Amino acid sequence: MHDGIRVTIWNEGVHEKEMDVVGKLYPQGMGGQIAKSLEGRPGIASVRSVTLDSPEQGLSDEILETTDVMTWWGHTAHDRVTDENAARVHQAVVERGMGFVPLHSAHYSKPFIKLMGTSCGLKWREWEGIGEKERIWCVNPGHPIAEGLPEYIELERTEMYGEHFDIPQPDQQVFISWFQGGEVFRSGCCWHRGLGKVFYFRPGHETLPIYYNEHVLQVIYNGVKWAAPTRLLAPPKRCCSEPLEKME
Ligand code: ZN
Image (cartoon, rainbow, N blue to C red; front, side, top):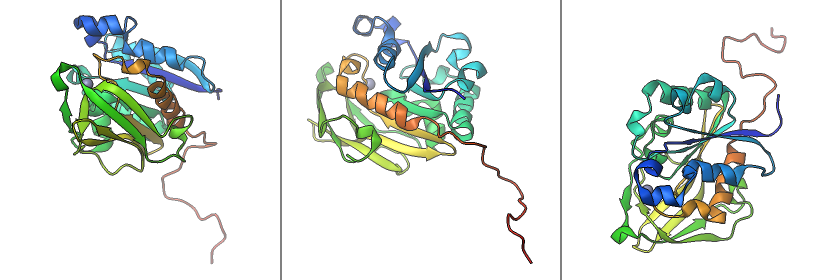
């Protein structure tokens, strides 16, 4: 048993290398920026960053077994994540309770699609290459992920994601976004899958400084805390079972 949440930040890490604008915006990679924002916060024991280029794609048994919550950012290289590794992430969530926090374009990541069982498709637009205004409304202010946040978060310039988002009905809906162009989107969604919890959070387009917004980073921190595994004295038993009481 250990204290605090051991976080692994999984970042694809391709745009940072291939697009100047992204490399300049995030010299340590988007993963590095998210990691920095989590380090030292109450309840966080450790933060480790891995990318697609890490040994075993950053998804080795050793890493998965020592991760309480994994955040995931991917976009251009979803297909390069092996099916075997995606299946092991899925297994870590449902069987061991590892929390999973897919961000932005991770809606099309293999582990998320496998956890949802739907296409996870959506509408998008990068208006004139500069983006448009988004208001992320908190629709569940009593939820732990709403802690320390205003009524809404405003992003001046961002990529639009719109409905319909092909996901199963969330177990809890925390945020809904409005976009300048008129669309809405379920931006913060929670699901329980087996022993694990999944929190999808929309913001994070790579060419814009979204992961420098303190409210966005607060949501990710809150999401990590919410998705952390429940500590059990014993794993649940699923088998033929003797009665607990004497029966006649
Ligand atoms: Zn994007």
